[in-house]
Length: 245
DNA sequence: AGTCCCAAACAAGTTACTTCA
DNA sequence: TCTGAAGTAACTTGTTTGGGA
Image (cartoon, rainbow, N blue to C red; front, side, top):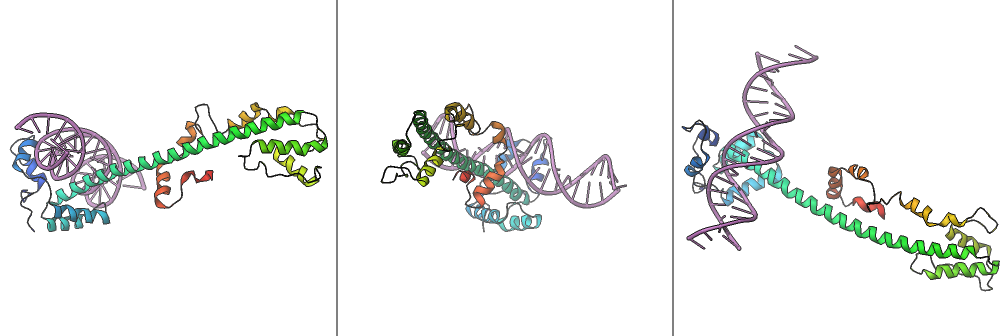
């Protein structure tokens, strides 16, 4: 192989050449001008890349061998590997940033969807509260519950309950209705309208939703280790936000 | 065993130069 | 032809690490 087109280093090596110059403080431009060829050949790069793929750090013995094969100084090979590691790390950071950004976008859109769903459920809850405040006959109860459910058909559980044909609530259907409401029987006087008011609801929400709109506090975010994060996302198919589903 | 010194290797940042749009 | 951005080989500096005294 012929590499003279690219390198004109002396047999003493790069370091020797640099520090045996006449100046105590070596002139870089002078040195560079003396070595007016810089780029390694495509073949040299290819060999270096191939080696880098198998191991990002070279053993001294392999470094010497590779340098001999490519007609380079061992120090040149060492420097190429150092630079290559730095470039690879930089690219890896870019990739990780892209992954993180995409994860964030997914999470943000999911959060927005959940917020909308929450609003829908709150509206439904208010309607049910309103209905519960009215005195009602047992025969009306089912009808009202059914009406409340049908008002929000987008709700997953809404509209799934049916009254019996005769219009009277059977024990089982009543039980289901009450289950949806999260309440007890008619006789339970402990039920209060405040149990369903928004303050309580917000209290619950504040557990996960902070004033700044973030899902968790900054302290909580710091608990995430980026290494673990990317370790998971790159080593297998598990997505760290999958706990939502 | 603990400490100091030294050399090698490395990461991070910089410089000088080339290439290309 | 000039110019600025991007890429790259080589360098500098500071840190870590392993071995010998």
